[in-house]
Image: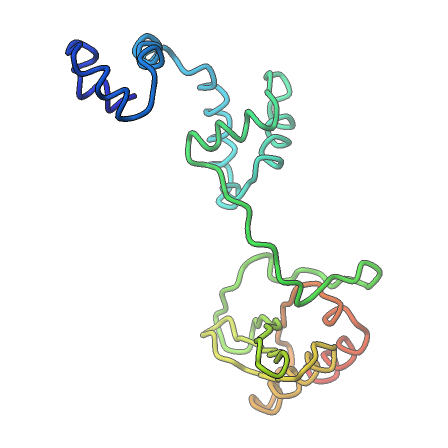
Length: 216
């Protein structure tokens, strides 16, 4: 609509309106409605302001999806009339605050809901001031002609050095234990290092906990 308005000098050049409407597959009435309403205040302007306020409160809030944003708005502004979750999402789209759904994980590690969970010691701070202070570990799957290869690695947050690496045709806890063992052999000593992982069943298993504690 904005392009038609520009090309027709806000509708002043009557002979061109029909041409551009046909070219862009819009009706003339829709164009006239746009011209009539374009300078009116946006009815969701207040909601957009509230969403921006929540996003600006914390550097991680810009990752909020529509469900979480809807809940945050209701919690933070109980006196405001917060519309439906769908409307909140449309406003987020309009101001560029929406986030497409992330690709579903490929299920390499799956959480064991019954297992004891370790505390999150890093709190999303993956920087380190010295080697072997903080490390992260995970498993990746590599398709091959004769099956799948599972690679487990430990990375040092200080310089992303691969401290330990192990490979197998399965992703049982033994693979993760072997990765820690290889890291200890490579570095000589990892005592005191924090090794951060997800809460997959391999990492919450008793076998990994015993092996991890014994070697670090």
